[in-house]
Length: 301
Image (cartoon, rainbow, N blue to C red; front, side, top):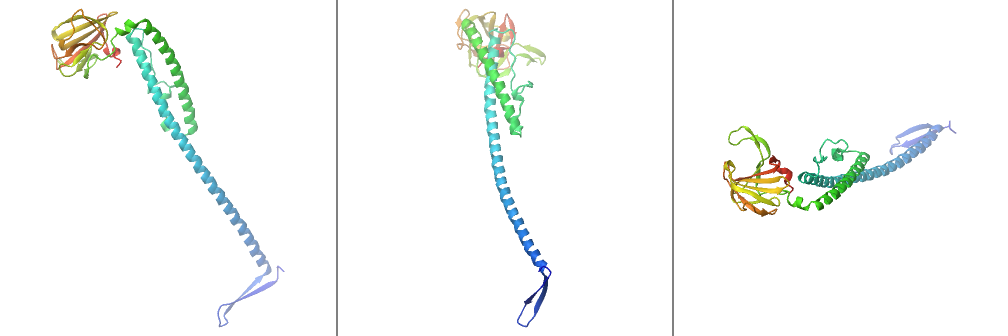
């Protein structure tokens, strides 16, 4: 059967033109097998295409899920960073208050965001992470360190509350607010003199504002000096006890008299331009045992 010859005659038109094909039997078998093979290949390709489409859809969904989780992690990181910053501010306030009240011998060292503490989560640039697993691990580290900071700060605050309860008068008599509103034009430390240009020690803060702007007592105390003092002009000094005093110079005039007890927030004078001055401002000093110290250590607001 496979070796028989088959003749196929194909007539093309009415004139009798035709084409004569001679085929062996095995060729038909070959065509059948070829058809079966092609059908099998088509079925396989169809199934493969369908499976591939399903897999692509699953991969797309997985990628969207990962991206959404990464967005949530980044958002959570931002919120945690805000909490961490709040804790850092509380730590700074705590440290400053301890220095003001002379509770600790030295200021407490605080790892602020951006410092060189290699183990601090603040060194982790989460926004540049590309792997979710790495981001998650670092997030857990961040939370652990944050939790440790919270527990430590809680202990410190409990200790501070006990100290303040036993030293209420010390707290009331310790300067803690700005003495006047205005612009800080010169800080504490070495600076070029506005009169000679040479480097001189500036013993306080200069706060510039309009003449007549009120000056407030930063804490409870007794006025021990309220007179004109040469280059410092109209000057007032408050003794807060514990060797701590504050000085106010270049005033327009004083609003408190020598021997008067003043309270925190009470008006004691007005900004002016008296004495040797380049313009209306308040020169504010804080002294311990007569030695000028940086007034910024005694400003909490």
